[in-house]
Amino acid sequence: MVNSKVHRWGTAESLISHMDRHNISSSFVTGFAFRDQGLCRIMNDYVLDAASRYRGRIVPLAVVSPCAKGASEEILRCAELGAAGVGELFPDGQELDISDAGQTWRMVGTCMEAGMFIMFHTAEQVGHQYVGKGRTGATEAAAFCMNHPQARVVFAHFGGGLWAYESMPEMKLALSNAYYDTAAWPWLYDHRVIEGIFASGAGNKILFGTDWPILEYPRYETIVDRTSLTEEQRSLLLSKNAQDLLARTKKSAGDL
Ligand SMILES: [Zn+2]
View 1 (tube, rainbow, N blue to C red):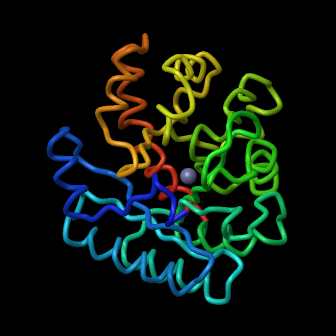
View 2 (view 1 turned 180 degrees about the vertical axis):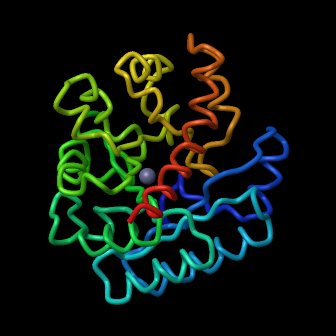
């Protein structure tokens, strides 16, 4: 992926200037989820340091190689330093089967103890291929939710379409703790997908993700402006749902 034409690294400084330019008050920031635990740790050190330099503007997430030795310790270290969640993990690149509870239970337990949500890269199991797409999609994501009903989880890139099943009564229940994000939206769907999400009843579970610096904010602004979302729906998408996720995750850790 690092050698592909679309790949770019972002720095904290370039992110903050991008946010200033587009009136964005704060962003969740994640490093790249390598299979090597040492590289994950380097990512975390950078993101956590950036978050301490730009307090409140950068909300840090931690990456770990979920089945590697020391992953739980690294999650707890990052939680101590202010990480709000773990992710965006990359199941295919990290050789993690998220539908297999034997591979996920330890990480889920650690995240719950630390009051963190988990975020996975997921993609459409149909449609065009692209670098980094992977095979993990709605099927595996749904299995993860059923294996871990207490874990709070975000499935990136619209959960590979998992949100559509929120209109099935039994799946709405099974997906109670699932959230989705919009990262890579301009490359995947047209503007109407978001109207479908609100129509399916999942409008309070969709988070605004960008995949910056690969894609920049104006691309999303254009697409959001084409939708028929109400002001209230726009504010759920752009900020309220994310605030709600943070508040609920902290509260459920307090209840343990
Ligand atoms: Zn992703």
